[in-house]
Amino acid sequence: MRRRPVNSSSVRSVGWSDGTLEIEYANGYVYQYFGVPQPTYAGLLAAPSIGSYVNKHIKPHYEFREL
Image (cartoon, rainbow, N blue to C red; front, side, top):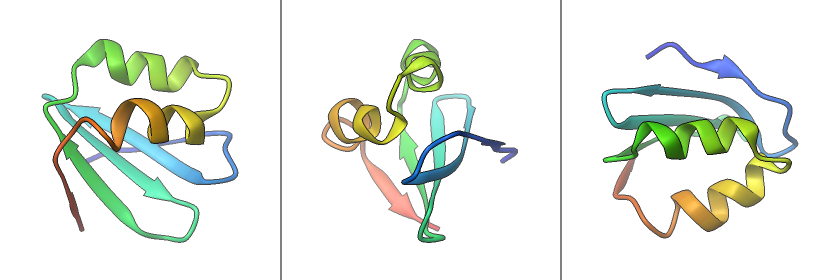
């Protein structure tokens, strides 16, 4: 999946396709989160703190796997 770099101390890049959100964290780990709607991805990109958004709106709500 193509990811775009983001301005965050904890997240390096993010990408979204067909409900799958892919996040590359600053530590190099990459996770995919499933069933994420496009408006949630848009909210992530617009968030003042991407790391906080991920912790509040992504991690507790979606199934994931590490790549």
